[in-house]
Image (cartoon, rainbow, N blue to C red):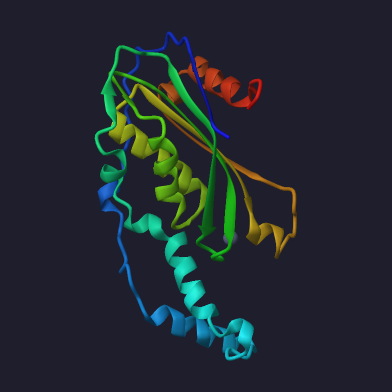
Length: 220
Ligand code: ZN
């Protein structure tokens, strides 16, 4: 469930100064690779399975399909996602889209991590269509990731596209590589944040964002 809050903010003075990773610089692997299914079949055998038994016979193709979906972010074009949904406004109050669900794969174990992201920005002269923000999150979540980089990439992309006074992103996630193996801590979550521009420089802006994220409105 997403909720959107806008509140008064008097902190429009600071210009954001950030280092930006261009979304275009993202590598894009081949869309189709028929070798993946045979690699998975080989993997099943090496794990001691009978890859020809009924339940597993079509598993390599299913895994191939699933992996391509879960890494489809590599082939997403941020400019196409935004598709001109940028609007000139005289609006200098904080825009917050919170509780954006995401699912990703950790690059260390290729196991899922999932959670919620809260994204806020302080417009300078433009706002973006609100539905675009969850799609930007998906474009970076559907890759092999670490939570820290995912959080940064979402913040920097919003900064680059909207050129706002500042951007704040908070990410809360649970990692299967912690829950199912190793330390086996089922209820521990990890939190990361990225604060750019006014969100980095001004405590009031940051506090306002944190208060909005922690606020649970009626019916949300
Ligand atoms: Zn991991």
